[in-house]
Length: 134
Image (cartoon, rainbow, N blue to C red; front, side, top):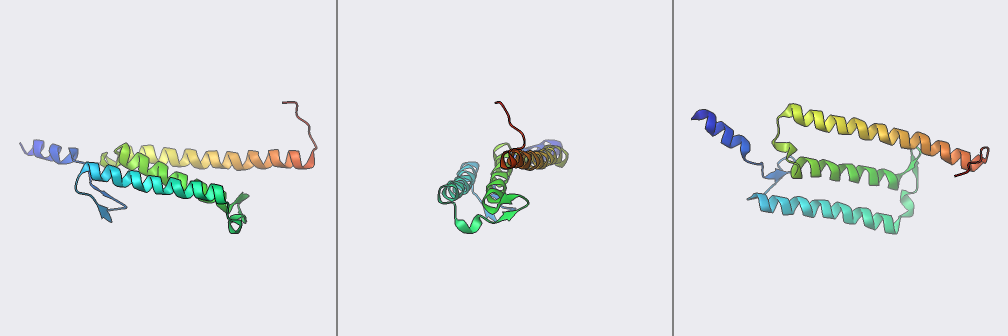
């Protein structure tokens, strides 16, 4: 009987986001809250993409600040989609770590490849040392 009670507790979803700072009364409110949060991030991304403020044209590690903002906001959205909509929050810590850390390292690796290869292509076109027949 006690085993059944602990199993029932494990099946209930946590109704808080932002590390417990914002709590909801039920799952429907939580889904709407996360959807609104993700929508706000998307609106900020679209607005920055349309406006392209000049003060974000400075560079850091071969990318403009605006591109870094897009990358960071996209990672935040991916985290919350995985954490809340895919219910990773309710899984055991080993599975969470396996999924999250694999994705983190894959994303870092892909960003590194994009930076290296993108810089190479830029230099090729800039210097016109090699011609390509695409």
